[in-house]
Image 1: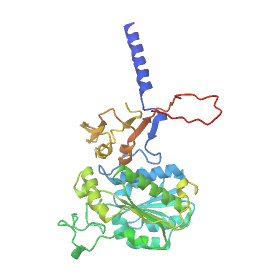
Image 2 (image 1 turned 180 degrees about the vertical axis):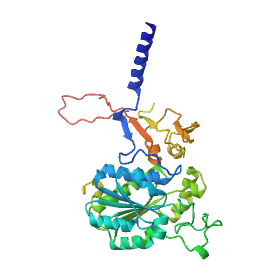
Image 3 (image 1 turned 90 degrees about the horizontal axis):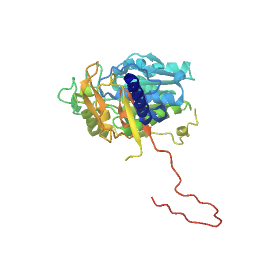
Amino acid sequence: MNEKRMLEEEKHFETIIAEESVCTNDNLVYEKPETLTDTPMHYCPGCGHGVAHRLIAEVIDELGIQDKTIGVAPVGCSVFAYNYLNIDMTEAAHGRASAVATGIKRVLPDKYVFSYQGDGDLAAIGTGETIHTCNRGENILIIFINNGIYGMTGGQMAPTTLIGMKSTTTPFGREVEVMGNPLKITELIAQLPGVYYCTRVAVNTPNNVRKAKKAILNGFKYQELKKGLSFVEIVSNCPSNWKMTPLESNKWLEENMLPFYPLGDLKVPKNPPKADKGELI
Amino acid sequence: MAKVKGDIIIDIEKCKGCELCASACPQDSLELSRKINSKGYHYIVKIEDNCTGCTNCALVCPEGIIKVYRKTDKKKEPIATIANVTGDITVTVQS
């Protein structure tokens, strides 16, 4: 008898807890998007790549284009991006992601094609491909992750490394006389007539993450118009190679990276279509 | 007492303990645990019961492992009923 009563009481309390619990499906306001797979990411703790992947997955889910999207992964830390995004993805040679994306888009013009590239990939080894793809105005979206360093190979200097910033190949800081000036590739390609939409966002604070999502959403929606290329630069951190904790790296990013790489739109369409209202797709 | 009540569920096995969510939380209700998960990372836990479900932690989480729930009191009961009015009237509501 005693056991039975205890069981009943337990059940009673369980139902009370369940009734008071906030964690019900009706109250769910945010969860991981479906396009993002359950595979644990290989990125270092605090890396901005994870947020960027999640934002792409969220946008794809929101537009409902999971079966119509083809991504091109670069060489770099995000080389395994195809493990985390549940869409068709391909791998490109180092720096050639925009060239591969051009080919895919020309053969399959109905698909949404994007390339996901880091700064060593897009701004150093693939500068030629990037500039000519942008100049031709291919209808693709280029997502450019800028953390000012070669992350995967161990933190060597990239073209986007700031003046005075330490890396394994510039142990005393980058010197202008020897290594030249940092390359603002987004400002460079914003001048090209083929580029339709060009913006720079960051993923260090919740507010910036929301803006970044909007930029990626616009990039995908403008692809439908076939007017040119969309370019989204995401200023990100690299805690491991900056030799900082994730919190310190975000603070450093805000104090040093953002003054040099100011956030905001660099090129917006003169008469923007009402893309935000979802009328295009 | 706050009208909005929120809660989060963290997948601690995938947590890498970067503490970005703890710094983004306006209520300071997240903290790094002293225990570690199977990968050897200290994981994040909710230590206060003052979550408002603002989704800030989930937005900055690089692993995408935080589920956010929010409960709002949507029941608004009428404070007065007006009937049989023919002309113009002015109603002021004092909260």
